Image (cartoon, rainbow, N blue to C red; front, side, top):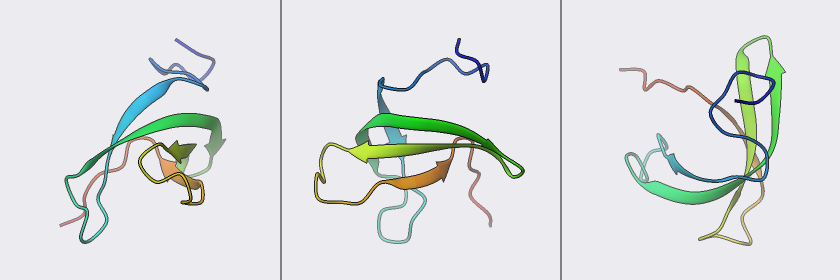
Length: 67
């Protein structure tokens, strides 16, 4: 576990599930670049291996789909 109590850490390779329209349910290979604590919760910055030209995004680590 890291300092945030997560089972993964910066630099680790992970799979991320998308909730974006058109990509909902798709999984992507990523590398964790940074993890930060915000008022809204934990966020991570990811580098997408399948899309090397894509800019890095900050995403909520535990994001739920809103119905």
